[in-house]
Length: 241
Image (cartoon, rainbow, N blue to C red; front, side, top):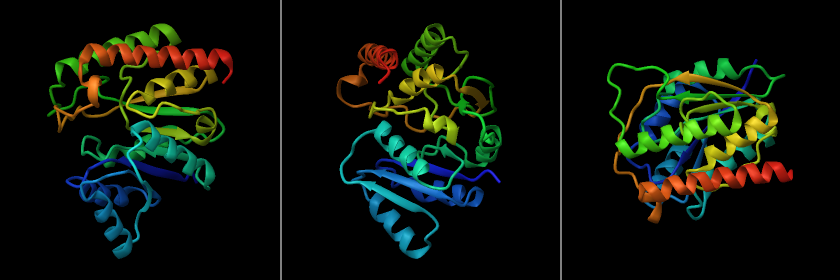
């Protein structure tokens, strides 16, 4: 039996966290929430759920450290436990927990290093959102650049809905703490020769005005930053660090 930990990085998701967890626990029994220093009541909602139902486990960062840092915590928790793999799913309502079994099945090759990544652009679904123009353009540019640099054939560089076999996790040591962490993962995955599988997922945007933080809300600045992250990740791989 291929046993996975399903982890949800959470930051200020009081409006969504209960509903998303209600759906996730119907699908998979081992659920970890990494609360990345929420200040909007999310921590209290999670504490009450653990006390009343005990159907999820919570690791809390005392201060906000970033999306990548929350995922890195999930990686460490998986490697330290008995699980054969990890599923990551965002908690803002854009990912559909009903798709988790397909991700688990695609990653359930424990003898191989496999990353299964959702793609919002692999297939069109009825009711798909219209992505914000700047986000779609930047995703397309960075995805094409990753494919050119690394010899990959992915279609969505940033989707957070993923599954990793344990062998794949052993090859990944992310250091980027923010939203650019997935780019570092692609560089390390290519260097390690991991198998990459994309599965289509619906394109859902519930918050088109989400902030990336400070200067990164400017599209040109964000694009330049993403390229710097790719440069750093490639340099680290080349240096063997």
